[in-house]
Amino acid sequence: MVKISEHILELLKDAVGSKGWSMDAGELGPHLMEWRGRWHGKTPILLKPASSLEISNILKICNEYGYKIVPQGGNTGLANGGLPDESGDEILLSLKRLNNEITIDPINNTITASAGVTVKQLQDFANHHDRLFPLSLASEGSCTVGGIVSTNAGGVNVLRYGTTRDLTLGVEAVMPTGEIICDLSGLRKNNTGYNISQLLIGAEGTLGIITRATFKLYPAIKQRFVMMVGVEVARQAIALLQCAKTFAGDYLSAFELMPQSGIEIVLKHIDDTSAPFPSQTKWLVLIEFGLAIPDQKFASRLENWLESQLSCGNIIDGTIAQSESQAEALWHLRETMSEAQKLEGVSIKHDISVPISKIDEFLTTADTAIKRILPAVRPMPFGHVGDGNLHYNLSQPVGTTSSEFMAFEDAFNQAVYDIVTQLGGSISAEHGIGRLKVDELERRKNPADLAAMRAIKKALDPNGILNMGRIVK
Image (cartoon, rainbow, N blue to C red; front, side, top):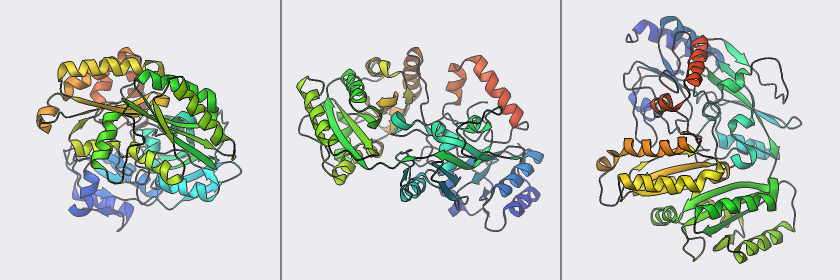
């Protein structure tokens, strides 16, 4: 790749105006480092366009001269898909200035927002109009519309509402050659050929740059009930999931599994946390129910259901939050688990999914496999068991240095991904492929699927300028 000339840099600066670019090391720094500090990149310039037209002009220049470009949203990704590489030849394009539009159609139950708007802003805007935007994840205060669409983000409410793909009705995007496509009508039915919006969802910025999106909205939740229960084996949690679905139907919003070992490090490292109940159980399950129409009898029915699960031995102990602050405290235990693991030392993370019926088999088999590699390793799996997505994280053993532990990363990855593949699962449930898993995908994806993906990439990005080396090579 030829280094970017001063002439091209001036063209790019002119395309975005004086406020739309930076070469200041202090400003570039946060955009060039992954939030956990694992990866760092280099770029000759940070572009900060404020409109789709400016992005179109940028891509036309890059496409004509063959320069590579990397789009970035909130920089909260976990697969190294939104950072430029270490060569210093990739131009970084931040979408944070595209943050001036949020509109709602309350009759159509849709919300449209520009790419730099955060998920938290979407949630608050919808709530102000007595609607629910249900996507919820730990980084919602930082992650943006463009990022969640590009990575098909999941989160804790997938069980009830689906992933970002299920919530997205259409997008506006700039294609690699500079053309702008737009489908923001909010139609539920539109059978007029290829659905380009759906193709761009989850493409991680390799096929186009998302600039706006239209999402489904739902009735606001008027009552929510949050509980945490303890079980001894994972299969009890899976059985409890089926019971909860039968008991509550669509009221069931979230069903999260956590190990006792994970709760212990949260209590150790995170302030203002406390154990949910006195009993010590190997696994804890966080369950949330949400009602759009208040039902004063649901609380008593929920208490009776909890008692029945205790009586028949499905659970060992449990508690129902009696206030919003108690509900938030229970969720805080779940949402700070990644932070606590970071404070405990290096983690090797696996964002995987398997059929719900295979979760117990996966956990048993994976624990055995990784302990053969390093007996002292500390598995701390947690996640969205209601949709089959587990974050199978491995923490470094006490007394082991981070470099000693990371030397086992490849062996751990192969062992975990082999089991996932054997069980018909996915090596990336919600974090994406990025650069982190591109080689793994090459090894495990059906060759015909890979060929089709490469053909699509070549057709839409003929000169290979947009987020190259992510998803497909």
